[in-house]
Image (cartoon, rainbow, N blue to C red; front, side, top):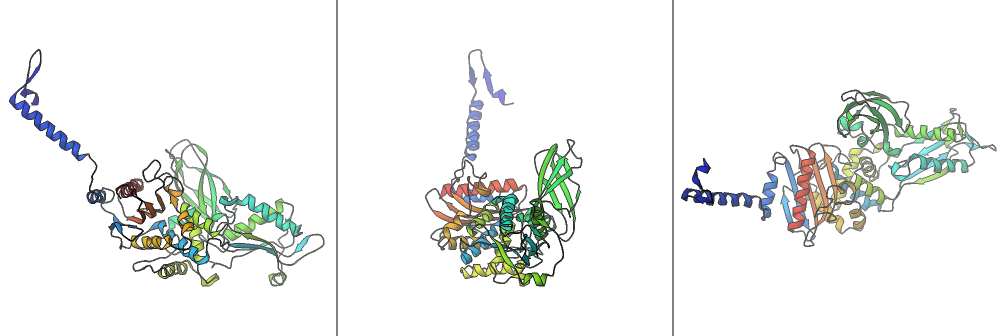
Length: 496
């Protein structure tokens, strides 16, 4: 045993020759252990260690960091085509901003057909003409309560006290079917899989309130839905679970009334909200306005009228303008709203109605990149939001776009649409208290086995850089991979 090399006396410990040698060896090994814990001063070695992290070893990774002069601070597989997830929204929002400018507004028109008699009876219909506004009725802008006040005041202001016909809708700005063919089944029933419409309403999403029992594993029940949608039928197979995570998913065909809910929500909740996609927003909008009119003493009688006749005598009641495009783009990028991205991608096309499609809109975004002199080799786009796994592009293409927008006419609007590290959007919590806080403005992207970030960063020495990091097919958890990206961005900032 080691202790055999020491001799003990009553007064002191007397080392032998062998014990002295042992002490020297222990000191050497101790120093080696301490040295291995010191920070890696060589960035190349740090980067190699980062690539060898257990989460990243099986992954396909692409990175490019480039300063304002075009000098590369870091490059790795930057020409590889990878699934970008929501960082693709940078392409869509840059394209529409360059084409229409920050002050553009969508317009929804409220008008009537027929004639109003001396008693205020409208012998005709009220029409909602969709203008492809993705924000109409959104809770981000006052919600349905605010919209009802404005529209009811306009209708009553036109002298209408009752409607012989009904509320009709015009959704002709967009095609009837806008569901991208490459979106997966799991996404389509949930709020982030809501598809665009010529008359999108309440962000094409509903809130479902569930009640969960105290006992883990027991079925939850549906309490109510908002906005009211009486034509949906829910088969709830959601069970109560420990923890606080929302792991419930809604499934259902857009043409059917049946919705299946699976997964888990936290136990012992009187009300737990999950969100689903509205597949027929134009119908929901018409029913909502009809209900609002009836509740406010403007009776809608639902008589069938000759539409051709009534259209010949149409008159405007109210023109509803959306927020400015700059605000829509800010929300799209900071909160990663897929519906907003698909709307602006469709509107970026010159065609309207049935001649339009999501796939055509995606091709148009790619064309806009080519007009910015970006090499699109390897770029394949099939939607505007990045929700499809069939989208691929390279980190270099994202950096080229960011560099282009840095000197574009609307550069400030574009840069301000990005989340700020430790301060706003999807980066608010990621860099709190970090050396990178306030130094990064970027768009994040996330779907199963995909993590991506792209935007601008400022290094410790003051270099202004554009960057893109895309990781596909990582092992382990999304949270761990996100942490690895955070550490890499912090190192880039500190070491340059």
